[in-house]
Amino acid sequence: MSLRQRGFTLIEMIVAMAILALLLTIAVPRYFSSLERSKDAVLMENLKITRDVIDKFYGDTGRYPDSLGELVDKRYLRQLPMDPVTQSTQTWIIVPPEPPLRGQVYDLRSGAKGHTSDGRAYSAL
Image 1 (spheres, rainbow, N blue to C red):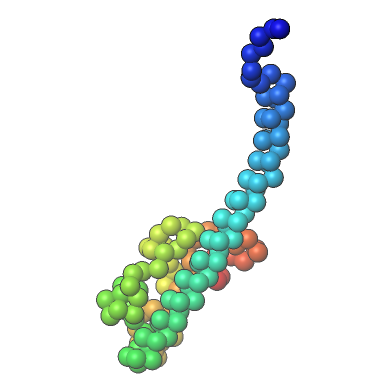
Image 2 (cartoon, rainbow, N blue to C red):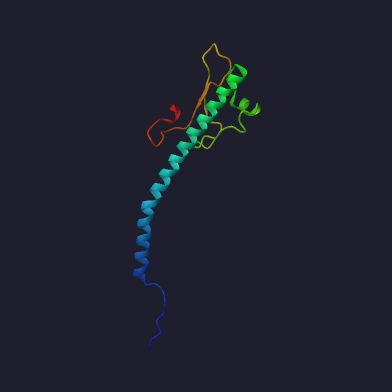
C-alpha cells in the first residue's frame, strides 16, 4: 500500500482557474454596467427632488433661491445634493430664471461630461 499525498494536480488547478476566469468574464461587465445605471438613477432622483424643493421655495417665498446653499440654510434640504457621476456637490450647473422673476436658481443640471447609459447627455437631464 503506497502513501499518496493528497492535493491538487497541476491540471486540476488549471481547469479550476479557467472556470473561474470564464465566470469573471461574464460577471464583471454586468457589475460595471449596473454601477453606471445606478449612478444614472441616483442622479435623476437627486435632480427631481432638488427641482421639487426649488418649486416649493418659490411657492413659499415668491422668488427663487439665490443659491443652492440657501435651500440648506432655510431647511428645505438637509444638505446639498451630490452629483453621483462627478462625486461632488460643487459641479451643478445653475440655470437662472427669466428676467422678470427674482432669484438665481431656477433649475439645475449635472456638470458631468458624457452620456447616460441610454445615450442622453448628463448636461441635458
